[in-house]
Length: 296
Length: 253
Image (cartoon, rainbow over all chains, first blue to last red; front, side, top):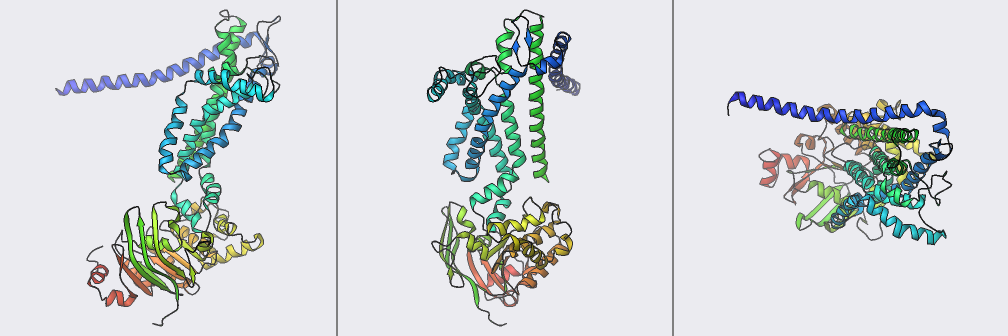
């Protein structure tokens, strides 16, 4: 091939790659500005303070009420419940995988955990409606089991693969020499795990938890199906709740274009965006800290 | 050279990793309050032998160990003897300095906690261990500093202090100077020679000069067997076995 042709191919490829890279930034910026724009439109009609502190969400009532608190508390409740279940289970499983399991167990367990991540959220939601929900209702003695607890357990299952995989990586990242040093002074396997390996993997485990939280907060389909969708202020784990994500998914399809209600959905989406952004940044911070600490 | 009583010994030692036999019918003795060097080319089983004595192979599921390991009269693999006890009496210093990612103080305190040393005795023990390892003057004002910020040589001396703090009877050292510069190496060697007053020391080394500088006895190993063992001077200047002679003169390795 002629030199000139090769050079021009090289240049055009560079241009294509550069464009795709910039496109991602443009899309992200576009989404952000769309959210911001519509949120501002909402706040021109409803005072931000009323929005943040309002304990009622009733856009179709008379008068219309737009308080984000019931939705925000619902999201936090379900996420908190999910994490209370998923964090100890996830760290425990990861510790078993990296420190105790034989190669054979590992070769079966790891792909299975990864497969768990591949189950579509709608299938998990379905499971919540027909199996887990009725089960909870039976045990507690409720008329139906579509409540925050149901959603929390399902979200825990969904967040587990992320938490396990990242924690497992973090534990593997701890140099073997730390373990040897600990065994060398007479520590048992358990003492070594609790006092040396897990603390040394701390930032990595924090990152795993943050990624799990991010997964749980942003999840829509499962909570939409499994938590009952009562927009009332949540009273506890065994009551129906409606998360931010579920609210947007339910109402966006039916809302008249460019009404206050329409803008309000962007406003709560913006709040969700800020939360997940915060969670992801925190996770990223810990991932970097972990990396730095081990390259040192 | 006077013959000191035997502190640590292994007889008819065979070790397999999976189906590969790494140590073949080894008989070794380490005299009390002496430094014994294990020398030999890479892969000859020196480290494996060293680690058999404080049962570091317990955690490798594919390791199979035969033979009798004695610390004085105590069989180290006796049923019912806790591995914690073995490792308290036989301390270890590793090839790469491996302080925990904790403070200098906490690095030594960890072993004391594991071995249930009463809280009120710990800080005195820690100070003594650091003094004994000749690092006290360098770190006494910054005991809360992360140990990972010390220099390589300081880290290795801290690791020696960590081992010494448990008042072991034997200290096993697996190439403790291989990652250090000559000056730090010299400091560690001086330390080892001083420590033999209180401890029995077994050291794996690839450095022939080092073995001659610090070891009273030397054991030469090759392909999983002990070829020759005896006084360091004899091994280096008047070896009985031709293989030993070739190795110590640097003809192979």
